[in-house]
Each structure stands twice: as structure tokens, then as C-alpha cells.
Image (cartoon, rainbow, N blue to C red; front, side):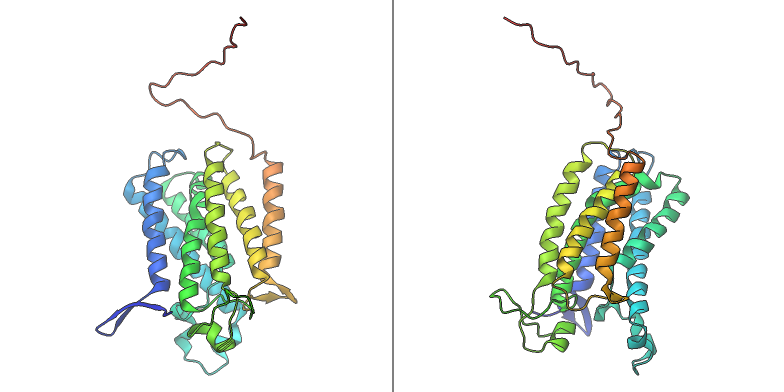
Amino acid sequence: MNPVFLSFAGFEVRYYGLCYALAIIIGYQIAIRDHKHWGLNKLSTDDLFDLVLFSFFGGLLGGRLYYVAFNFNHYFHSGKPWWEFLAMWHGGMAIHGALILGPLALWVGCKIKGVSFLNVTDMWATHFLYAQALGRIGNFMNGDAHGYPTDQPWGVVFPYGPAAEEFPGIPTHPVMLYESGLNLIGWALLFKISRTHRQPGFMMCAYAITYSLIRFFCSMFRADDLYMYGFRAPHVVSVAAIVGSLILIMGFDLAKKRIVPLKKGEKKKLNVPKAKA
């Protein structure tokens, strides 16, 4: 197990960065394939790529700022070089920060492009869990976002990263892989739901509920969770996201099916009862 995927001439390609790059590439291809399903016909391939970048860099910045804010003393009062807070390749990202600033950056992008923010976020929300599944594989290779010690046969001894520093030579829960697998299951579920044509904003709420349930469960095995007022921050944020999403779904009737215009040349099917013999 090694966080470095490839090294040559002093240049390193790490699994962490590789997973992010794959997430961008796959996300762009999905957007090209699915954007018409979400009523985003006016967007060109360049526009779609721009929106991918808005989301990605906003999420990247938000995830890092959130983590650094909860670990301020570690970065600025421990004798570390001042630039260490920028070293994301050493680990230290918080998904909830990404879920705050990423959509905000996307909203700005949608305003610039003149398209519906809700439609774009629904498209993104349908597939975002696959990107998180890739990211957790990067965490696994990096030895961060690690779990508690375990005597289970699938426990992993990490030779690198924060897991090795906190629990040297001790098997820990490979919680990154737990979440990666659950994210893939959640992705399949959200994709199936997305084909039912609910109201704009529904998929964003469905994603928030699905991922919050996944993260709430996985956090019970995490050794490096952030805390707020004595509670695990992911648990607090997850409960708030679930409650808030349910309020939005019920308050705005987002689960109601919307009328989808017929495709060109398609005829409306009539349900005519069969005559009895």
C-alpha cells in the first residue's frame, strides 16, 4: 500500500489526486450524456465543463477550509511551516465543507451561464456519490479518514498516513472502503429515482438524505472525525441535513411527479381497457 501511484524524475502522481482527476473526467462525460434529461439543452460541452470546474474547485476549497477551521491550532500554532494548511495531498479534507461551498460556487456558475441552478444540482446530485466513492479509495491509499482499531479479520494495518501515525502497527477498520461501497449502492439508488421525473430540487434533497445516512453510519467507525460541542460534527450535520431535506420535500411537494414533454415524433399512449371476452 502506497499513496504514490507513479513517480518519475522527482514528480509524483498520487492516488488521491488521481481519484479527483477521474471524478472530473467521469462527471464531465455524465453531464454530456444527461444534461438534456434535466432540461439543460442550451448548454454547450464547454459550458458543462465550466460548471464541472466551478463545482469541483468550490468543493475542494470548501472541504479544505472546513477542515483547517476545525484544526486551526494544528496548522498555525504547532510549529508547522505556514504553507502546510495548503498541503491537501497530506490529507485533511471535510466533505461537509465541500457540500457547502461547492453548491455556492455552482450557483455562481449557473448565474453566469443563465441556467437553472436546481436542474444542474439535481443532475450533479444524482451522480455525486460515485465521485465520493472514488475519493474514499484515494483516502484508503493515503491512510487518512481512518477508522478505529479492530480485531476483525478484515482490519488493515496502514504503513503510511495519519492512520499509521495514530495507530502504528495496529489493524484498523477500513472505513474508507465501507463508505466507498455504500456510496456506490446509494449512487445506483439515486440514479433509479432520477428517472421518475420529480420536481426540481428533489434529487438534491434525496442525495442529502442518502449520503447523510451513509456518513452517520460510517462515522461510528471513524477515529478522526471532527467534533463540535462534544458531538461528532458529521452526526450533527447529517441529522440537520436529513431534517432540512425532509422539510423541503414536504413543504414544497418536491416528490410530486412533473409532466415531461413528449420527445419529437413520440405519441402519447392511451390506457384503453381491454374488452371482456
